[in-house]
Length: 136
Image 1 (tube, rainbow, N blue to C red):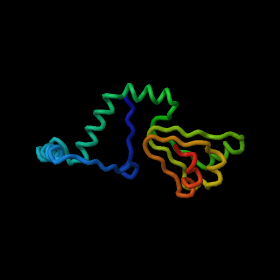
Image 2 (cartoon, one colour):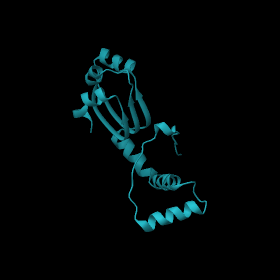
Image 3 (cartoon, helix red, strand yellow):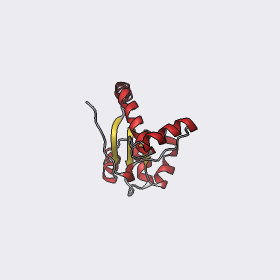
Image 4 (spheres, rainbow, N blue to C red):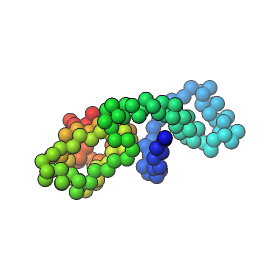
């Protein structure tokens, strides 16, 4: 069973890759022949195919390392409840972890013990700065 996460374009991350001229030429040929809409379409498809090929390894690693798989958002209200309960959070996400923009740096510092994200981590500049030594 495969879980596919649909994200808006604004929820995607841009990456840069280097290709040799022969590989790039082959990509352009497949685009020109109509197999793909553009270079990005081909690259996304190739990456998804590789991820599907290794899906069992990813699932095992997620379970072993206790990662949340997908999109996880931490709100001010959630963090305030943790603070009030005297507990801390160890964020472990494979995908996208977001700390809400209204979370003050002091609250994040008081409630987040560590951050380990494979993918993307979104938080305000102040929160990222406060958690700098806790982000792995």
